Length: 496
Image (cartoon, rainbow, N blue to C red; front, side):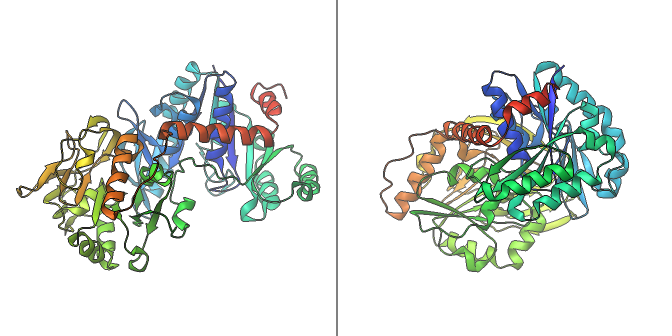
């Protein structure tokens, strides 16, 4: 059975996922077979494995850092928020049903055997399992029957490293308060403290570290600097949402829907030189972009209503009618059609008029389509012609059946097997991860430069896969320089 180490945090968004990814990379670089594990993840960014299982995007990223394929056993429970009070519950990669928070809390104990089985399956195949916690381990009103923090550490008999975020302030109080609120047996599992996202002179911080060790009785394993590492993040706290418009050659506006999901679809575009990807949430921010993208959403009907009420829909339609390029992915594709209906009350029921930019209608269904996609784009005429024949890789995640509701000579299929369609300057598809494929992304940028009448210059010589691997290596280098890796190995192999 594998050895293990668990990364817990003083609160959400302290950097647990990034630290986990970095340790995964370090262990893999050092010749160990490593794998990530998170018993319960709550996120709208998800990923489809090769066998069609849906897991949290963070665990797929961590698996990539390990150099292995993602599997459902790495994230046995995924919660995808549908409303403020409830989530779709996904067990071992398959959707169970929507549950209110109170119902899920009551049923958590029933999922423990599933979690144990998933962990044991991973443990038989690998040397080291890097376990990630969620939120804070000391939500004292919720700690009974915990399955994701200290409860999980107990199941795996895992030592714990506790991460605090100094960038948000109060890091000493974060760490000391968390240690104090742990039960004595849980406190014993904490083998070290990590201060993350540090900016400034560490010599000024050093006396505080010594005092922290004294009052907590725990060793500070290291101080990780705030770094510009481009690795997919798992939820809507993504810092890129707050970035301001950049004065670059190509301007892409992604509509920042309230229930936006899988915004990692656009990270490959963000990594391109001279390309600005802005997340727009009102008409004042929209401007005159070269491309407008409607992203995926966990609630198509609610977000379509929001588009209408905010007047963003009217502005998009106006620009589309003027010839502006518009793309819709998954829920965004559904919005571009003539109507979306919900006879089974999947998203609250009813029927809503679509944006009318594509001649399709969608009916939401109970069963979710989750499948990897490897195909090629059809031969396309018109502005999107450079995409013709280009290789497509990605995945589908949607609960809806979309059909043509009119015939038009200008409608063209985009890709086989429900891959979407093109109508003049509008493209809709169900395929997530579309832009990760170098050929499709480069051809799309050629289109945008061509429409704008601007010379592109030298395209990136690095594939997006190579780019991602360099980011994992960069993260590993930072952690090696800032953490006591030798001590971490001693903790993993229980030498201390």
